[in-house]
Image 1 (cartoon, rainbow, N blue to C red):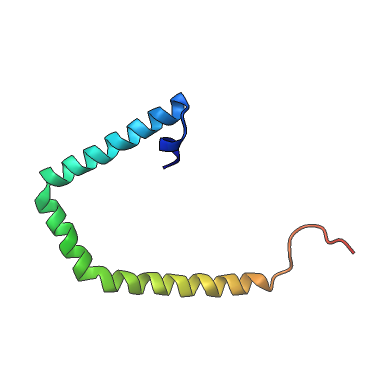
Image 2: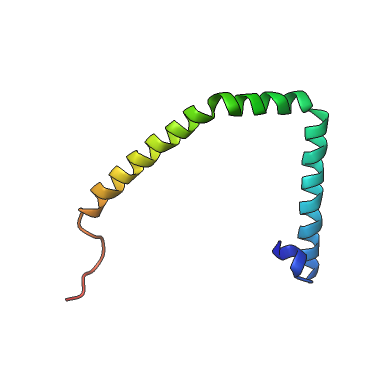
Length: 79
């Protein structure tokens, strides 16, 4: 979005490249509709399981963050 607002040569080049990438993605999705259907099917089928995995990972990361909070901080302490 920023590249479309700025007027520098670099910003214009970046904006053009972004548009080319999105155009290429759209072309690939049109060419490979069977792949798109499979991806949509897999998303629907495994979405709940993937969400559950992320929830477990989130819980594990919260536990490790709590454990690290009790450790002595690194660095110099000012009295």
